[in-house]
Length: 259
Image (cartoon, rainbow, N blue to C red; front, top):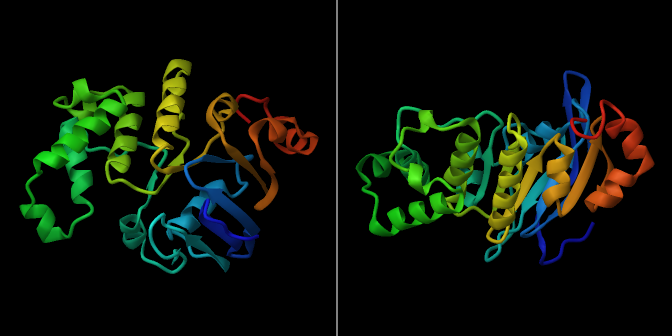
């Protein structure tokens, strides 16, 4: 698989074995810049493990992941420390929101910005006017500007998800990875989340693990289907969901909505 200027992430020959269990086998995927790229598949297909590999939470048994920053030399992510990968511009939001519920929405955003700094810098750092403006603009983008002085714990479930997306996005990453961002949301919140991610992809690449097929169809630019740790199919959402093999091993299990 060649690499062109539109590739932001290259996953090459990734295999992972856990105590004799083959979690991933020879996975090859190129993620294009400024797209929304979904990884879908049945439970146990290896989706979350793949995200763990990208952010170096898990080490692959074989293969490597390479990041291609827009204005810099390529970076081999495999073998790097997790915090260094974040500082290079590859960030991740997990499924369960991890906001500080006793702090205000604005204070959560401030802490996220400080995450780019060292311990002593964070302790003594005062948020600049430029940083406050960036926080306000980001909160406005996710529809939480009017909530910025409220405790994060008072937010509804969907709003907490949007806050955590904002906390990652305010750091100006080149790639943001989201693990089931629509989980627990009703249809209006899910739709709004999709529209938000379409705005975000103008400035960074979005990688999503998801089960909700309506959400996938709403916003996906590319879909990779994983099955038993292998790439079953990859392409645009309509071709993928229409494929008989995909339907047989994935969509046929429990229907299209929550496969």
